[in-house]
Image (cartoon, rainbow, N blue to C red; front, side, top):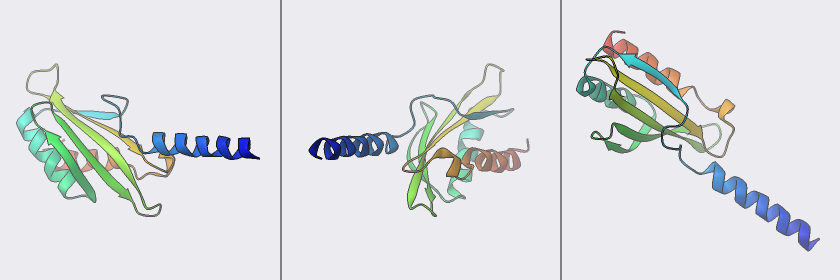
Length: 127
């Protein structure tokens, strides 16, 4: 019985630790390229995030990284996101990448934040 309790406690701890981590650096995610300068896309991305139920936790323009989270209201959990805004290989173009991970719930139950963010960016930037 004691071994079973220890095993269950270990599994719970493992799930809790992996479920509460933020997204890794880079990682896989959705991305779009905009035919606009990095400064214009950076400002537009922050405006878009501000207009959604997403909290910006940290931002660093020099590295082009925004860390944010959106609430999964039906689960009482959060969805962590990293948004990367960086120069594209095409001069005058900027690439935006959104990497998201639900914490404490499976990704398939999370709102489609990347699609929502890109739809708003497309509208704002005229793409």
